[in-house]
Image (cartoon, rainbow, N blue to C red; front, side, top):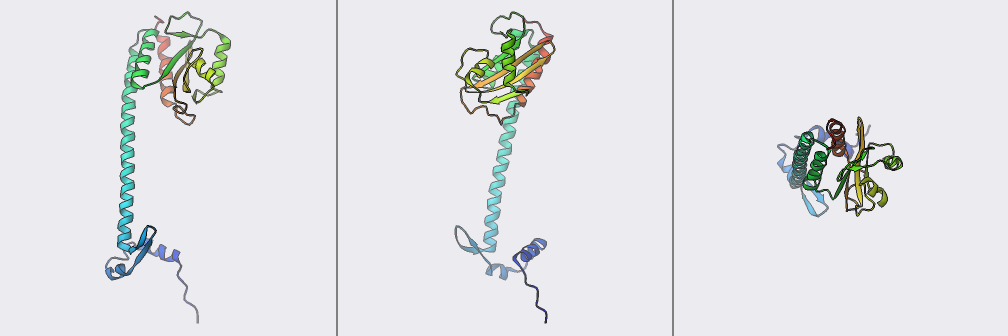
Length: 223
């Protein structure tokens, strides 16, 4: 006489997954089923299902809230970026570009420090920063290690170089190379907080502004 195949937990789980309406019309069975709960005594299956659904609803509401918050931040970033791009397009000379950057980065984006270095032989009036020393230019380029941008914590002297200063209180930095026809340089933003800019952060916004500068600066006079 052959033995009946023995059901396993996996068989029961698979059957219930294949027949999600199994308990419809079986109220008496549902009333007899109890599920152990790790926070208290056993509860009925229906109560346990309600608890699971409530928890999932809480998680879904939190995810929705996070999505809405991200959308709000993205809208704000877009509006700030739009204002900056329009100001750069409307700038009539390099000093106008400098003023537009300063107004946007400090007021809209709350940047602690920033600088736009111009690798040029020209004599530029302050606040424009001209880097004419070839060895200094090579030192700055080496900080990028072949990448378009750099972000995170650097040595104090290196952060100062990217800001065109002898010394600085900044402790973290994000910088992108400006690669325009007849105009090469570096756009740098920095924070006094060591972990404000991290190596894992995306530099898409900074790259975008650097690209606009690369196109716009050759089109307008210095002053």
